[in-house]
Length: 260
Image (tube, rainbow, N blue to C red; front, side, top):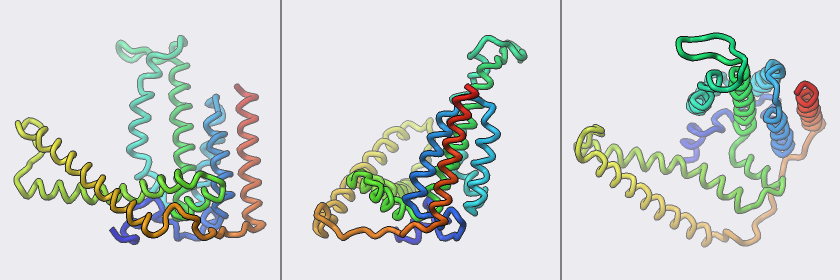
């Protein structure tokens, strides 16, 4: 797969934009937004959700990313979170608010469900902004600049890179199976056997490819002292963005402690 094809499909599709978030020095951006994410995670009262939403939507608007991009990323994890909390209003708490047939909606459970969904939206959206306003490779370099272990940075980069390779391989295998008459009918007697065989073939091919990649990396000097990585020098604007984000995170944390 070419680098351009990866770029088109990846989370850094809009890394070329020139918004204030895109121009923020990556190391400072990672440290600042991760602290803001931590502040979101520590909020324990629903009364701060409007402020959190305002902060999150403000950051996303400043990033210049299309809202359709966020919606496409939110869909699958959003359904997962919804499935986890959908029963909370009916089983958690003692204060009854309303009755829907045999089910009773309880205030504590409803508030807790709202808090979980709200925190998830703010955390996930901020993370999308963090990793979508620069290339994934620059994010890995910035993590190294923040003393993130090299081996873990390499694992994250290679995992991200070869998710697309595995997806391409899976599509090729699935197409070949369909051309040979496989319909994917759950009630067909040979479906489980075929799917198991395809999954095994995918794992074997992936393992063989990973071995080839590792061998090629070693032959090119992987594991030895590499060249020094140069980072963008932070500007006054970068420090101002960082200070504003840190003040916002600290203020949100203090308000959460006061109102809890």
